[in-house]
Each structure stands twice: as structure tokens, then as C-alpha cells.
Amino acid sequence: MHSKDIAIIGAGPAGLIAAERLAQAGHRVTIHDRMASPARKFLLAGRGGLNLTHSEPLETFLPHYGAARDALEPAIMAFPPQALRDWADGLGAESFVGSTGRVFPKAMKASPLLRAWLRRLDGLGVRLETGRRWTGWDEAGALTFATASGETVTLTPDATLLALGGASWPRLGSDGGWVPLLAEKGVAVAPLRPANGGFAVAWSDTLRERFAGAPLKRIALRFAGKQVVGEAMIDAHGLEGGAIYALSGPLREAIARDGSATLHIDLRPDLDLARLTEKLGKRRPGETLSNHLRKAAGLSPAAVAVLRDSVGSRLDETPAALAAAIKSAPLRLTGTMPIDRAISSAGGIVASEIDDCFMLRRLPGVFVAGEMLDWEAPTGGYLLQGCFATGVAAAAGMVGWLRRDAG
Ligand SMILES: Cc1cc2nc3c(=O)[nH]c(=O)nc-3n(C[C@H](O)[C@H](O)[C@H](O)COP(=O)(O)OP(=O)(O)OC[C@H]3O[C@@H](n4cnc5c(N)ncnc54)[C@H](O)[C@@H]3O)c2cc1C
Image (tube, helix red, strand yellow):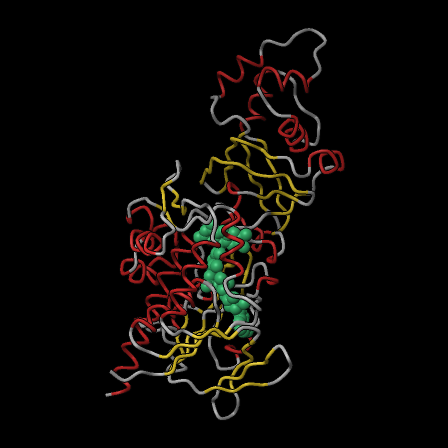
């Protein structure tokens, strides 16, 4: 066994799981991160319960990776959702399946799991260097880092793993600053764009002032032949939340192509058009339209406001027309919300730059994993599963490459 020096840059889930595997394989591993403490985004994900993965069978799980499915499938097959659950269970963060099939640790947060994980890494001899920003390579090919105190550190490990994340929530560490560093080496990187983020809507002043922050519960959103049932949240500048995140890929592409996209909201997906028309047929004399919509159609004040905004407030008040508008309120989205507020990023290192071992074809000995690769997926646990699986695959690739290199 030839123990080698490995530098892992990025202490997010992809980098940490790779560190664990490489140290277990007997290598000397140091993780470098620009932040003062590791896994900040993982900890933030824990605020939403830490949706680790999804319990559905692989034949429905894998299509969530869309165009990137082929590139990710071998890694996910080698480290599938059950392996991730077993791993979390092994760290004392016993997982459970929620009502929607999503998998969470019972504690519904990331901190106990992260603490146990860091203890395990420490026990394996993994070193963690924080406050070290990777700045590229020097002329001799050594990795260069800027330390918090302004010094430059250079390193020449036997192999390197880049696990630097995407560009959402940059204040947590992943700011996409690696893109020009790899582009300089000729590595093709698809532009980082917001994924699982909100969209801008030119709300009326009334709606913005009265309903920013209000939820739209049990709605269905339709775009380009796809319907998503769920919740959204009115924001002063647009619409946020799980249901719209699930459509964020096609909406983002349509806005980039056409300048805007029109989404249709069904504000009562549980009632069909005929039943809703019937309910709206009973209106008390003198009753205001808002009260009628609240009582007969069961719409919340926020939903009534969205309905009015969607038609520019000239609502046809006949029962059939109202029912049709409630079932399909058009909403024009004029842009994406900024990437720093998105859950994840689309874009990254394109698949053709990476070999089967997750090594960069142009930079032998440099491996890549996690959200910095060119893939996207909806929320539901698919993001962390993709990061863990590619981290495990890159570690396996490095172990094999170092062995071949040694002999
Ligand atoms: C609010 C929120 C909630 C989320 N909830 C979920 C969820 O419930 N389920 C789910 O599946 N996913 C969730 N995600 C997404 C998930 O957290 C990310 O996809 C995942 O953390 C990406 O892992 P990664 O290891 O690739 O990168 P990251 O976790 O982003 O880690 C990259 C690391 O690299 C470091 N780094 C970057 N550049 C440099 C540099 N130049 N030098 C040194 N270090 C550097 C960063 O400091 C960071 O620590 C959520 C994201 C957000 C923002």
C-alpha cells in the first residue's frame, strides 16, 4: 500500500465524503476551505430539515437529473439513496421517509450529523485547513492558496480533488470563483445560472405591499406541458417556493430565449372546472367579489389578489369565467431571481471534460465532484444525493488512478 498526499479543496458534502473514502483507503488527506468552518451550505440545508435523498425507486429517481442523467447514473448506481441512508444511520443520524417520500435525518437538522462526521474524519487522520482560498496553480504547477492572513501557500499533492460547489448563496463559501481558474486551463464550463430559485413578477403595488411574504398553499403551476402541485411564496419581487423551483429549468430557458415566460396557476387544483363553476353560481346579493371568491371558491386573500393581478383586475364575474380564471390564472415571469438567493446552480464543468473516474481530461491528477459539475436537479434530496455520489465516485477514481500511477 503506497499512501499518497491528497488535497481536497472544498469542505462541502462532496469534498467531505471523498475525504472519508480516501482516508479509509489509507491516503493522507488534507481538506482546504476558504471559510472559517466547513460545510456552511450543508448546515443551512439543515434549517429546512436536511432532505438527504428520496426514497422512490431508481427508475423514477434518475430521470430527475434530466440531460445529466447519463453522466451521473454510474455514480448514483454505485452509491444509491439507500447507501446514503445507511451512511447517515452509521453516523447516528437515523433517517426516516417523510410523507412525500423525501428522506430526512430524524433530528431534522444537519449539525449533529456534521459533528459526528467531522469526528470520524478526525479519527481517520484527515486534516482540515480553513481560511484558505484556492487561487489556482503557479507556473511550476503547484496549487496556490491565499490564507486569511494574506500569505500565499503552495502545495504539490499527489492528487487533487476540486469540490468547490456552485455559485448560489456565495456568502456561505461557494462563489463560483473557480470558473476563470479552470477556464484559463482550457476546461469548458457552462455558465453558472440560478436553479431552484424564484422568478421575477411585476406585481401591482397593492399586491406587493399587502401580500409580500404570503404563502399560496395547495396550488398547481403549469408550464410547457408540466404541472407541479405544491406551494409557492409571494415575494416583493416575484414568486418563490417549492412548486416554482420544480419548474425552474424550463422557465429559466424560456426567459433566456423569449425575454419572459407565462406560467398558469391553478388556485384550486382539488376542484374541477364544473364543480367550481357550480360553487361560484351561488352569490349573495350585494356580496363583494373578494368575499364571494373567499367564501364560494375558498381562496385566501393572497390568492384573490394574485387572481386579480393576473387579469389586470378586470375580472369577468360570471361563474364560468371566474372558475376558468381560478383554474388557469396567467402569470408573466420577467426574469430569474439572483443566483445568490437560489438553492443551487445549473451549469458547471461540462461532462465531456471529465473521464469515467471524474478526472479532468486536460489536468491529469485533478478530480472534480459535486455541484461544480454541469448538472441540475429539483429539490427533493436529488442535490445532496448527486453531490455525495459524485464525491464517492471521484474518491474511487483517485484511489484507482494513484494505484496505477504507483505501479
Ligand atoms: C438554503 C438551501 C437549502 C438546501 N437544502 C437542500 C436539501 O434539503 N436537500 C438537498 O439535496 N440539497 C439542498 N441544498 C443544496 C445543497 O446544499 C448543495 O447542492 C450542496 O451543499 C453542494 O455540495 P458541494 O459539496 O458540491 O458544494 P458546497 O456545499 O457548496 O461546498 C463547497 C465548498 O467549497 C468551498 N470553496 C469554494 N470556493 C473555494 C476556494 N476558491 N477555495 C477554497 N474553498 C472554496 C466553499 O467554502 C464550500 O465550503 C440546499 C441549498 C441551499 C442554499
